[in-house]
Length: 98
Image (cartoon, rainbow, N blue to C red; front, side, top):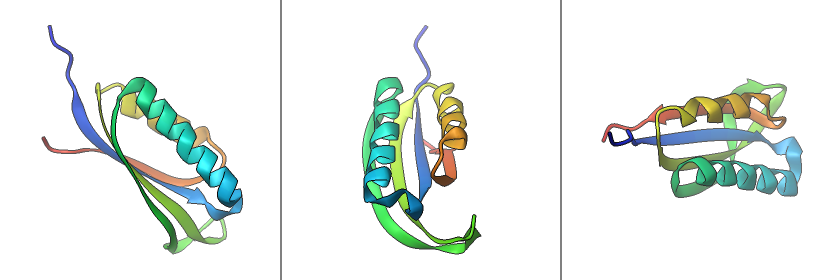
C-alpha cells in the first residue's frame, strides 16, 4: 500500500518584536521541522508587511510562506507547534489541489 502524499502551503506571521535574529531562528526552526517530516519545496520570505488589523497590539508582521509535500497527518502537528510557539501571531496551513 502506497502512502498518501499531498501538497500543502503554510503561511506564518511572525511578531516583529522577535527582532531579526528571533525571526531568522523561527524560520529555521519551522524549515527544519518541515524538512524532517515532509519534502520542503520552497520557503518564500515575504518579509515585513502591514497587518490588516492589529494583532496583540502589533501593526506589522513578518510573513513567510512554506510549500511542502507530506502525508496527511503532518500539517495538524505543524499547526499545533505554531500555536504553542511564542512569536507566531497567525498561521495557516492549506492543502493545495493537485
